[in-house]
View 1 (cartoon, each protein chain N blue to C red):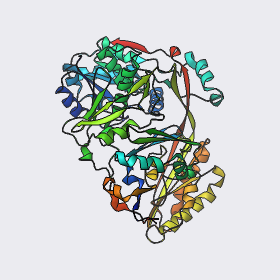
View 2 (cartoon, rainbow over the protein chains, first blue to last red; view 1 turned 180 degrees about the vertical axis):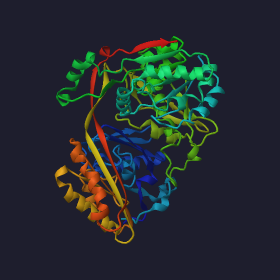
View 3 (cartoon, chains in turn red, brown; view 1 turned 60 degrees about the vertical axis):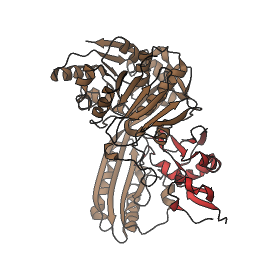
View 4 (cartoon, each protein chain N blue to C red; view 1 turned 45 degrees about the vertical axis):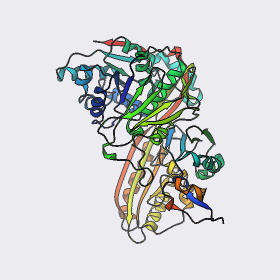
Amino acid sequence: MKPDILIVPLQCAAHGRTGDKGDRSNISVIAWHPELYPLVVEQVTQEAVARRFAHRSPVRVTRHLLPRLHAMNFVLDGVLDGGVNDALNLDSHGKALSFLLLDLPLAVPAALRPLLKNPTLLETPR
Amino acid sequence: MPLPLHVGCAAGFSGDRVDAARPVVDTLLQRDGAAVLIFETLAERTLALAQLARQADPEAGYEPLLVEMVRPVLADCLAHRIRIVSNFGAANPRAAARRLFALAAELGLRRPRIAVVEGDDVAGPAHEALLREALGAPARGLAIASANAYLGAEAIAEALRQGADIVVTGRVADPSLTVGPAMAHFGWAADDWDRLAGATMAGHLLECGAQVCGGYYADPGFKDVPDLAHVGYPIATLDADGGCVIGKARDTGGCVDEHTVKEQLLYELHDPRAYLTPDVVADIGDAVVQPVGRDEVRLAGVRGHPRPQMLKVNVFHPHGWLAEGEISYAGRGAEARARLAAEVLRARLADAGPLRVDLVGVASVFGDDAGRWLQAQPAGDARDVRLRVALNHLDKRMAERLPREVTALYTCGPAGGGGVRTALRQRLGTLSCVVPRERVPARLEILQ
């Protein structure tokens, strides 16, 4: 346990939106501040996202980096149970999925706390 | 330097708010330069539903809210040369044009020049062989309800060059509604890739209406949006080099800032260096967004690559039935009673195929159809739970059993269940393919 590291939900460091085309979902992750971007890139990896969505059995997860926008775009293939025309989900577009990703725990150096949104949402450091 | 082009967007989907256009037009009237008003009303499925509507009524099949959307602004648009460009023609652009002529007459306005852009509909016999070949094995034996190619901006640009007041299209790529007016206004060539790409991304920011102005963005405590109830619709000001400043209608709620723009820029994009449209392959890999004023953000640095030789076609076909049912449980033991009701339904519908179960209030939309997510949630003590079940079946009679079984929970299920709602709908399956662009030429006609 390092007291100089805060664990917060990704939502404190980044925002995002989900889009869909067929059985493919894309989720943007946009850092709230340029200094938070490297942390997000380091921790919100393809593997981390694939694990987050494991129950939806992604065929492939691809991450695209947009350093000039301090943003990443995740493309998740095969996670929508066939997409809007086949899925039985109430949210057949998967519109809510960005909020599943934004709940991912993120480790942030305490010095960067002023850059976080709502840092009151601290989780217990692990 | 040519004057800038202002493109306002007053709809981002079929059925969008009909009071959106007025503030957009009021703002456009105060700007110097040329102005265009677009309405984007065609999601992927919208056109298939429009096609079915047209089959039922030959004068239907265009945007059902066409008149409500256009009526409040048609007089000002015609008087002040604000051209209207929209895909609200859907499956029947000519009928939409007829309705707009009638609307202008009802309002005592001059008769507009209306252009219709067609050629996107490839469901007919002329394209059947092409389509079957492009779709391959998955399409064998399917009854095709609709098939539409995504056309590009060139016919729209040509219609405006020929003086159209209103351009009515069926399926065109959403950004083409912006690229067409930009090509006509600035005189860009159809292979001026960087400029076309800039206008394409401007169109992409506009095409979902309020989504770039704080709509679908607000998240209290994280993303606070002023006066969301009156969120404004966007206006992009394009320059001759394809850059743009995105803003919104005056005296409206919402906000346009660096973050609302980035969110919409990446919306429904896959590879950000290769956003495929019929007009250009747009590349935002090195693009930048920069606030330039209150509710004004500049997008620059978009690059373009040569357009694809093939056009995307979406095909819809009737594909079985979707049955859904819901019932609520509240108070002590609500979750346990909802879970028991789900067990009852699973047993009663075991032979009707996989049943999706949601416990709304416990676990629902994050979950997968197979139920792995729900299974991973430990049973709890939620006190207000709505059980929702759903299944697909090709046979309508089998699908009909679900609403009956959910209703039977009133007398045969756990205690205290209430508020049953059920629905049974035909599903439309979808397939996509690409076809050579020369096989689906756009057809333009100016009606007077």
